Image 1 (tube, rainbow, N blue to C red):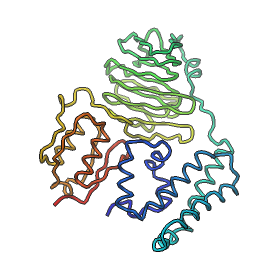
Image 2 (tube, one colour; image 1 turned 60 degrees about the vertical axis):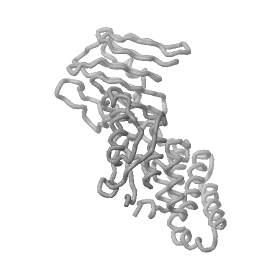
Image 3 (cartoon, one colour; image 1 turned 180 degrees about the vertical axis):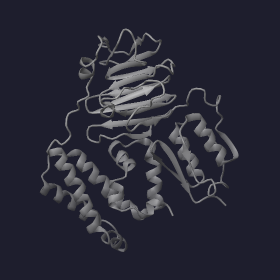
Image 4 (cartoon, helix red, strand yellow; image 1 turned 120 degrees about the vertical axis):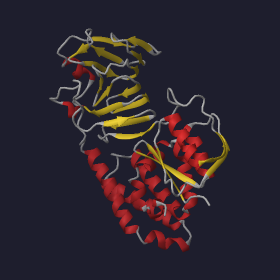
Length: 367
């Protein structure tokens, strides 16, 4: 049975992908959630309730009192219950008290956190990194309106976006490390050097690579690391305090998240944890299958998923026993990754979900 069959209101409210879809309207999830509503029409009401509550909280996170929030939650729940046919009301009312209590708890907690400014201002900022450097740094800033190319002493290159700055030591290799401090957005193409790992410090996140390409977008409230090629290790700056990093044979301490092509991690002040996901528009990775042909003629689905995974570098997980008898006859060309995936899943009557930077395929199988 599909896991969403058991979803209640609280489950939708706490589902990361559902919240992102509601708040940002990400096209990549349109197919998934639309198909879910089609498969389980009895869940449509709960999805609408959860979406309205999420949007209400986003619009008024700290302007409403507890009483106003209670009133708003009850209004949404009561009005939506009255709009459904009588034969379905029992389904909703059965868990109404539990769902309402959960929603009030979540919304109330959010109000308390926002109202009391519980999230403290980060201690890890570009200015503090630069001022704490034991050696003088060279700073380059892009005050123009176009990306600026910056060539580092080791041969690595940076595309520095407008209003961004980088600082680094003129004698670039220090204690078996290559270190760059970033404010703003930049795309890095790092020259491979296993003996001297490359570190980028951007507010609360530290990124470590040997030789790869990736983008970092940093601001006072948010940091994103997006991988194009190779592997990237990311961790919180607070876990580095008092540790020496980058010495050959010594791994980064603390909790490290490994990212591969078309994966990203987002760190925000509101949710100060590392969360891995897939980029909005995955692209074919370097050195992938030469000119992959996505024209399938009764092709086993295992081969289809293998080609997708090799082309985009995104892990695709599925039940090979249940879906092993499925085959595909379709011609795909230049569609974006998630459009291709949606067409494939629709053809074999399956669904997909993005979880921890991976794609998970579920379906009943084929005869």
